[in-house]
Length: 92
Image (cartoon, rainbow, N blue to C red; front, side, top):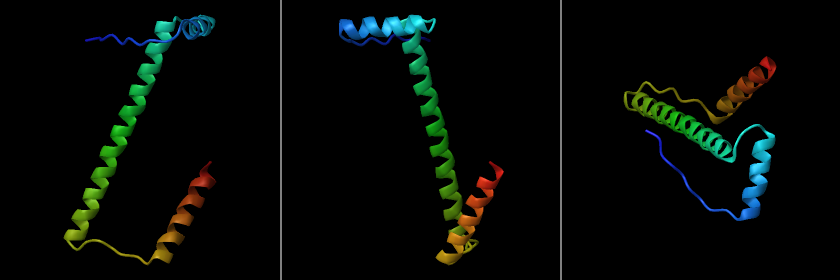
């Protein structure tokens, strides 16, 4: 099912936007549609990441409650994170 989006802009904004869209081989409607689709995809990714993060937090609490969690000192955690970041940078 498709839906319609309407909004108002002044004539000059519309005229300039139409000129830019046409210079890129599309219509103003097409450019607005592409932007809406891009925004929706960004939101899908955000929601997916939020779900993943919530699952990771839940797993961590489950480990904590079942006494399977492993605690490390802050200095050790910092050193491990720096090593991890260095390894990622080395791959690039």
